[in-house]
Image (cartoon, rainbow, N blue to C red; front, side, top):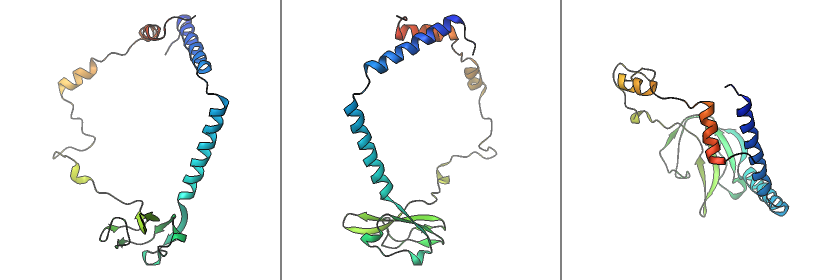
Length: 167
């Protein structure tokens, strides 16, 4: 994109406007300090939510106790959930699925954090066409070819209309 002196002057005017807006609406020091405290508290809570528990076979998952809350395990073998899982019994999961020990109301349960969800039934597929097939019609191609891009001058005029002239 080529810039001329007029474009650069307008760009500098926009930068000056942005600087004035930042100064006029800068948060007060107490608000910034409070925001930093809230952010630190949230980060500490999030960091303490889950803890790495390592890898384990399904049969070796830890007991469902308060001491194990937040532990996440990578299950090393295929398994089928039991009633001790949030999702209930009977769901099949492959090796490499992550399971966390979580609080669910008064109960402590396992929660499957990852797994494979087969969405292939939602795909519409025409015979002989793949995902990379070029299926545009002539009308669609013509419509796309007719789209024009604004010039630098047109963009500058739009910005002038929105932000006004430089002071």
